[in-house]
Each structure stands twice: as structure tokens, then as C-alpha cells.
Image 1 (cartoon, one colour):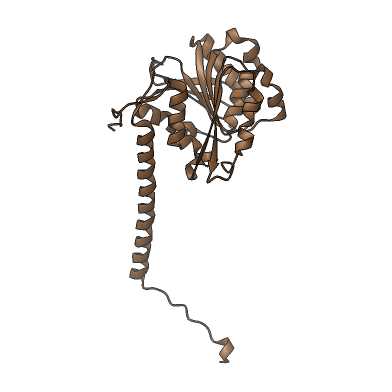
Image 2 (cartoon, rainbow, N blue to C red):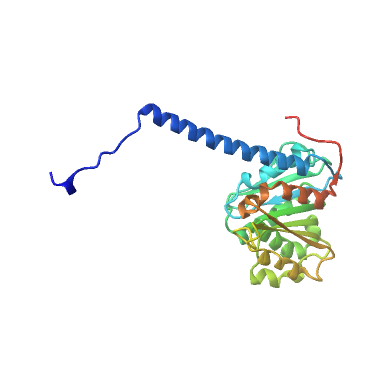
Length: 284
């Protein structure tokens, strides 16, 4: 056989050696994952483990963005509950036809009740804002809730903004008063910008942006675009403040709502969180 036609033999590791390599690789992955989890928990305890908040019966309504589900804000509400900052008591499920059903796990109470909104049709913000409007009408008329706070992420912020500048701005007696609104990482259309004059002046606003490794954005929304909200509301609201979180992977757009620093900012703004030397670490 000519030299150039000789076949190269492929050497295969013995099955036992392949298993050992696979086992070592798997253990390395598990160790890295364990390190991430432990680091996350340590950061969580640092941000929330020494927090004392002011309790209120005003519910906070969480609205997440495009293609979102419970995994967006559900874990945040659980963390806030775990550290006795709030109580995750209700979930509003909104069907594609707009019908809203409230899953109640208990009374709202007066320890910062948290309400999660989940849309079946979760990628049409204009339609969702109309559905949110109907749900808020229900909270006022049927559940007799006089006031709420809002926390939004990504297009969830657009849904809330459109609600606040839409029908609720004209017929305020039919909807809960909005006391505070937290806007996390979004941008706004020309139509939304032109509606800024309809934004309720009395709503206190916190705007949070993410900056991954100083790149000027969160790999989804630029800091500049996010902070346009401040320009839109300048002179139109009595209280506006903004934060830019500069860091690593937890500042990525789709992880901001799992970021313990964001949890702490939420607690600070909504419930006047203060440091206490006593610990409130969860026991379970």
C-alpha cells in the first residue's frame, strides 16, 4: 500500500479511563456550580440578612417582561419572604382572553404583601397593558385595594408605564392609587415618551440599570437608553431617583431580577430598609 494511503489508527482510551475522566469532569462542574450557589447565597445574606423594614398593608405588584413566567419575579418574592421582608401571598393569572384569576394563598395582611402577575400571552406588551388595567380595576372594585406599588422588569416596565399613562390616568377613582414604581432595565418607544405628560406626578420612581463589566449596558438594554426615563419624567414627578449597578454576570439583563443587590434596592425604596446588627437569616 502506498505511503499516502496508509490509514491512521485512532487510539481509544480504555473504558475505565474514559469513565474516570468523565467522573473528574463532572465533579469539577459540580464544584463550580456549588461555588456559584454558595457565593450567591453569601451575597444574598449580605444584602438581606441584616435588614429591618417598615411594614405596610400596601401590596406590591410584580410585572415581568417578554416570554417571562414564574421564574422571573417568583424567586425574588420568595427571597423577600424568606428574610421576612414581605409576604408572597397572591398570584394573578391572566388568560389569553384577558380573564384574570387570583390564586390566594392567604390574606394580604399588613407585612408588605407581594402580588405576582403572570400572563398566558406574555409577549404582546400593548395587549398586556390592557389586561393589567382590567386586573387593577378588579383589585380596586372587588378586592377593595386602595393603593399599590409596582416593580417591573424589561417590557414589564412598559406594561406598567402604559397602564399608568392610559385609562388609569383618566379614571383614577376606578383604580388603586400607585404610590411607588420601580423600573428595572427597559427602553421606551416614541409613543410612550410622548405620553410622559400623563404620568401621575405623585408616583415615586426608582429606575435601575445594569452595567456588565463597565460595557455601558446589561447586554440587552444600554444604561443610556434605560436612563431616558429620567429625561421623560423630569419636572413631571415629585420624586425620581436612579441607580446603575456595575458588576459581573448578575448585572446581565436576564439576571437582574435574581440579583441580591436589586433585592436590597427594592427593599430600600419600597419599605425604607435599614441595617440592623441582628440577623434575620432564614431557618429553612
